[in-house]
Image (cartoon, rainbow, N blue to C red; front, side, top):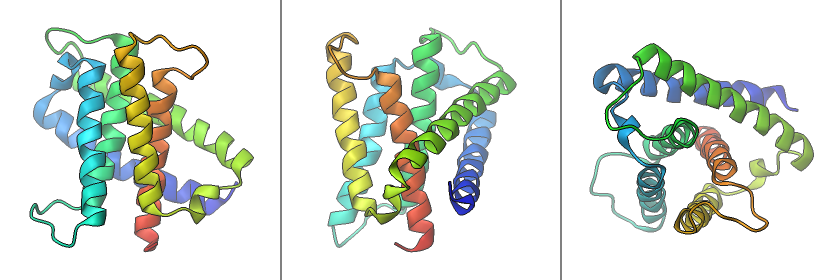
Length: 181
C-alpha cells in the first residue's frame, strides 16, 4: 500500500482525535446515553448537510464540509463503541477510558483500510468527494433499515461493518479535500 496514504490517513485521524479529545474534555462522554439509532440519525444529518452543500450555491451556516466529515468520523466511532458497550442512563466512562476506546476503534478502522486498499488498489483515489458522500448516505440508509429490523439481516454485514466503512469513507473524503480534488 501507498506510504502516502498511510501518512494522510494518520494525519486525518490525528485531526479527528484532537477534536474528539477536546470535546470529551469539555463535555465528558455525555454521548454514552445515546442509542445507536440516535447516532445513526446524527451522522445522517451531517452527511445530508454535506450533500446539500455540494449541490447548493449558497451556504448560510459558517461550518464547512470538512468539519462535517470529521463529525461523521467521530460519531461513527461513538456508534461502534455504543454497539459494543450498549447505551447507559448516565455517562460511565472517564475521559481516559473514552479516549482509549476511541483510539482502539480507529486502529481497527486503519487495519481494515489497509486490507481493503490492498484488494481494491486504492480505487477511492479516483472517486469524487460527492460520490463518497452518496455512499455514506446509502450506508446510513442501510443501517437504518437494519436497525428497524432489530439488527436482523439475512446476508448483509452487520451494522458495525457499515460504520467502519463510513469512518474510512469519511477519512478518504477528507484526504481528497486536502488534496484539492
